[in-house]
Image (cartoon, rainbow, N blue to C red):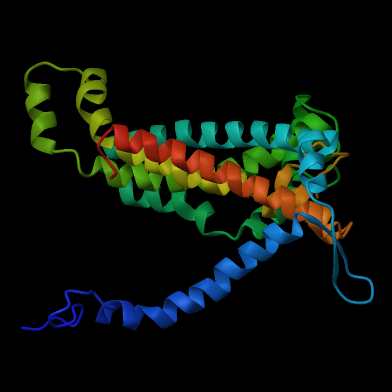
Length: 300
């Protein structure tokens, strides 16, 4: 039977039917993705002016040199690192802990899970507005409680340290349920018969967790860590709504700095370089996690 991928007698392979069918979608994908990507790279080597229509002035490596020497942007990278480590770290610890706890509960598990998952279904902008309302120094419930108990008497979103902590906790409140949900899915794959056998043999909870449960869910936990890490790198909504990067530069992480550079100062060439820097960082983090998964035999 003649194959549609091979020419008779010549042995030369042509374009397969599958490739021909995919070709329109591939062309569309190239137009929608590759062209803007190449365009942004080109912008990063230019000063872009919008006065009298868009125009480019070739500046070579100037924007890239600024990216690594600009103390303001380097400060935003430092705050991004703090935000990234704090949010992802707290969410992973709480998410895994809550999932292990829910896994042990029999009565009321699904009701508790429904309540825990609720924040995840709220739009980040709404979470930001809710957080700003609750921490307002005039009528906010949290601000009133902290003032009444004497734990904190200053304006929560008006002080650099407390403002950064507040947006971190808002992120944690919204996205810890996602970690819980993923880890719970992993826990459901642990064979119950094996755990019961270990229990009969006298293994306590921590021994079962360390030697049976954790090896079974480690891959799932790493995937959850990868998902949240990618999201935390580009996170924007809550901070933009609550503090807009303030007070001063206290919560101005790199996505907020990118927005400000592009759409407040219209320094589009430099903004393109910052955006590509974020992309490079995301790729490095993703490759790091993929290497971990490959080393554990969980990815090819």
